[in-house]
Length: 222
Image 1 (tube, one colour):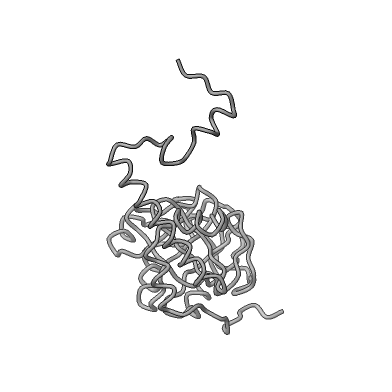
Image 2: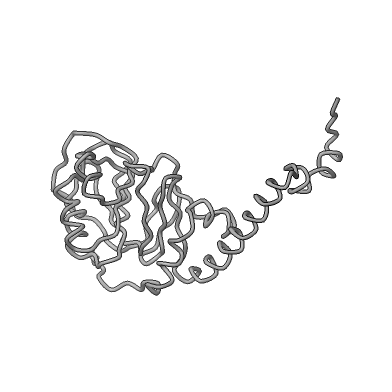
């Protein structure tokens, strides 16, 4: 078995940057309500956001050996997607966050735990995790890097584009990024139009054309 795959296909950097201008929620809705990671995976600071290429890592529970390997091989712009068996342990802290910044890594997303969150916030490195916990980890077990990963209720492939912000994290297939951009732009434009109509005094029933639907369902208004 090849543990570490270093050659992965990534989306065009300009497309990744353009996709990153849209919110995670917009991208999720625009691409057909797919790609959202488990809602418990949230940023350690609500102002944190990122968009980059998935660099997948599987660690054994309460073990961060392969995370350290991944940081050593990841490329600038990559997002570390770290599966840790949904275990609350501090597998990542300010020392490794500084290593990530030095290597140009964009963000870390884990279903495990992190610590030193105050220092990481001050550093400004985006970290999204399921747990915050002070208990440490060991460095014992090998695992796969840049293999397809079941993570946060999704299958994540190396090179997929991942966007995260205060609302959560969404995954976009590498080959679907350009389409997701166009769909997200159209959704943003449509929503801007809805807002303008609200400002002119229209109601949600009018803007969303809900009157006929409600009548068919038998809505009774006094």
